[in-house]
Length: 212
Length: 212
DNA sequence: TATATAAGTTAGGTTAGCCTAACATTTATG
DNA sequence: CATAAATGTTAGGCTAACCTAACTTATATA
Image (cartoon, rainbow over all chains, first blue to last red; front, side, top):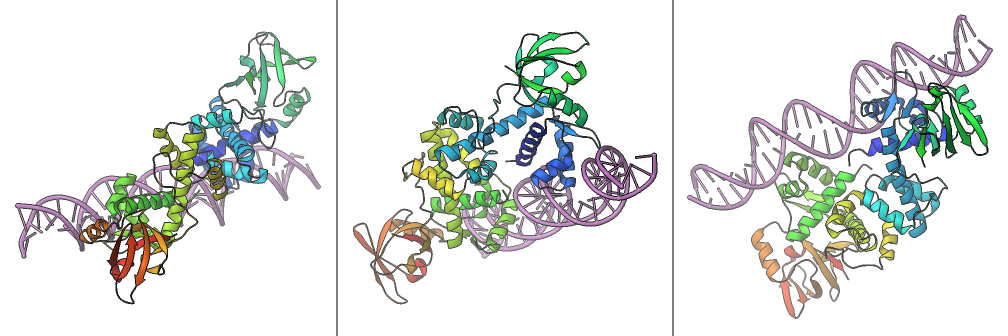
């Protein structure tokens, strides 16, 4: 019953980072959770110490692989609970978020899996959001081997211009990609829908994906 | 997410008081919850300040009517959750207590009622304990009118000899009674099973019951 | 009934998570 | 490109719940 706050922060960061497809600012967490900048700063340091987020003084924040894993566990529980509360208990969609918020910290992995089964493994929550598969681990785009397929999670890009370029290429959350070619120290070639695109190696290490 | 501890204390006190059918000692709460005597003492004062328990320095402790009400809300949620986890999710009976413990603080009254309905209004939890009807209010035996029936909740007797006398008369939790006669400032006459018994007015104000 | 043991209290401390206010740094804009 | 606005940090404080150790009161028993 101790890590309630940490879980809330991780879920908030996950949501914000996916929403913006880039590294986020601490003030956004502050606004999202309704907690003062100072308190957020404090928690950010704790999360960084546990290597759940990447953080440097006065800089932006993003989840590490470990952080994504932890965050997805909570997001998974949260969305399964929302689905349960809505579909099985018949609680109004406007209320399920708040209630899931309180329950997500207490529900065990086992219970969440059973609820998932009871719901017949839904893909989305009542609000339409994807329910993450918290068993599959996130990795960087650069880690995927040639010919393999993956789904974009979100990037950890800091610069807005860079992000715009990436977004305009279609490298956005949920995008399906296939690695076509990898040149050592050179760009990475990939298939995205019907088009082939090339991305610099430096950018590849700023894009989180999940292997198919 | 603030009153988790208070809820745990209330449920503990309810359980202990019902189990022993008398006012309880602070050291028992300490052992039951695995919390130091000093911390229990601190919380006891807070609960007393909120009039959830009756408490005097160096003396025994028992729930007030208000405290019983609050405690039963938690006990109700706890037991409904245990039933749900066991019967619907199929989680082992040895695990459901711990899990319900974590969930009970977050679950809303509305959700608990819906779970209750889903379970077809069970009377007992997986461990056999009665699920309290948290809608019906507790009162003192002396408050019940002649000819009315009630169920004994537990007493708030402090003295062991007195308790033994009362227990031997059959005034124990779950006992069904009917008030036969009430004499002003005199004893109260009641039916208990096949026997009629008389109880002094002073003791009547130390027995909590629920009117039928 | 005196006294050892059990129970309850007090004092003083810790930690997590929150706060405001003041200050520092970064970013955006005239 | 200077400076205003936004963002981030630091200092200092608060509260709820916990703790240990020392002390007081109540209870049980020789």
